[in-house]
Length: 429
Ligand SMILES: [Zn+2]
Ligand SMILES: [Zn+2]
Image (cartoon, rainbow, N blue to C red; front, side, top):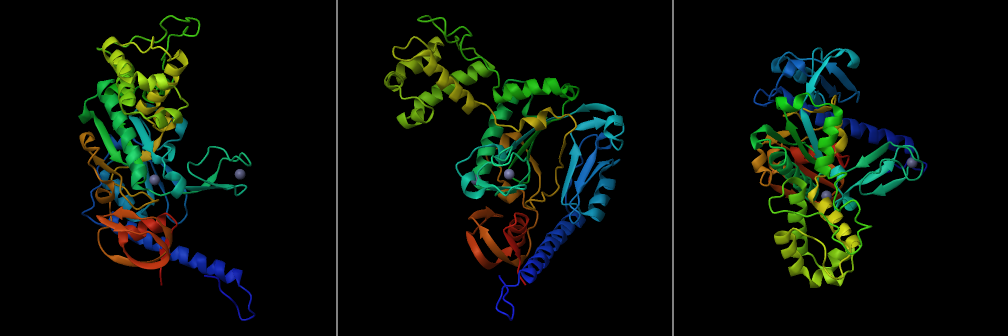
């Protein structure tokens, strides 16, 4: 939309100013929709348990900074804040405090929920190279796919990111969540009812364990749980495997195995049953003996519980295979969230400022069937005309929309809000 002035030169100042006005109008539109949501008496915002012992924080729409160390005695005082302030994002602590509104060192930590965050931002998917982009805020280096922790060009750690809550990404996050809840249920012994599972409102899921048994766990104990879930430090081979040439080197896996032993064994069986020479090549194995003896190996894995003593299959090959199976069986959680006992986490029932979708709770057993693109939609009425710069095909509120490229479209409000929040559209005049 370059503006040419009467001297025939493009007028950058006006172009910039026009863009700014457009952006403000779009942000106002989103703000108005958030107002309608929070001010609607029919909007359900469930109260977190022990609300008065939690710290609350929220991000302001216009000023873009975070207000922290807030305390609410009950859901009605919290709702009146939402009603008046209308933040873009709302969080509360996983922790319980004597004085949640005091400075950090004076709060008096009483305990914290055990919280897990599974986000497509941390999972390598085949599609994130297509729809995700990052730009280093310092030097402008850009790339596609997962945002690195440090800039490869200048080592800065701040990036502008452009992501998309695509169906495939959410599906991979869901698979990681299924593995996590399976571990929490079968290896840790929580009942499914004790696990609170949420769609995050963006590209992932949260799992909260709010049970008294976990409340007093310190950061070290939580790190142990994280290591278990991610399979960090798991012993796969006998530690002296290299010296034991010719002798049996792998662990023995029994039928009554439990926890990771069982996960590795079943995972190995499933992998071998379905693997192709290409899959093996992908993990750096070109060993024909593996595929040739597939039946024998699977039988031995399950009945005999031994992975070695197969002619032509070395200890190193087993190790590579087992590492790969471990990777498939582990859950790719954001490890920092679980170990931080002062973490603020998005509040259930509030809107996500990057999408306009709600954080929603649903029963753990419904993970496979819960559809965030219908159930997390907050704005169900109306249409609005927007200029979309670019968007892939997507589903929202039961409709399939896009792809769009530099076009003006009349879209359902929920879709328009999401595109504006993602920096891919602005309200058309
Ligand atoms: Zn850089
Ligand atoms: Zn994707």
